[in-house]
Length: 182
Image (cartoon, rainbow, N blue to C red; front, side):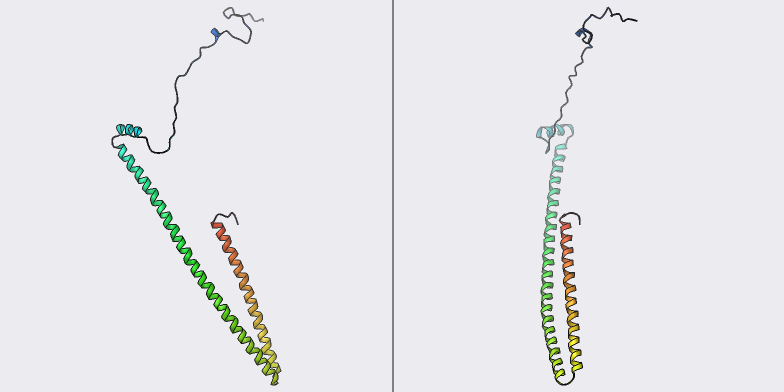
């Protein structure tokens, strides 16, 4: 079956139709307007709103004033909290300094007392040794050595514990400041 050209359509190239055979174009003449603004309502808009809703302008202004006062109150509370934290930190520092001085004082007194006791033990052991009590003199010197080892071990343990606490405190402080995952 062969195709016969339609007599109603004028002949032209196969891929181009004459303009009169094209469907009519519709044009849309509507417009869309969009505006964005941050901030208070302009006086003209406020007037228009007030005409639509009597008393709107006064209510709006009262709300703006309440909002500003609310933000001020929040800022004042933040400042008060920061001041309280600074005062608390100052008190903590003073207590820590007092503890540090007390520990230093105790350490000096302990060193002096330990030196006096060790010197007395050595003098006693020497006196006992010269007076024929060598076994007792050896026992006194041995006891002195044992006490020295205990004191040294306790001091070493306390220093390592103090380092561990300082490391933990610095890690905790870094976490508070947002220093990452630990």
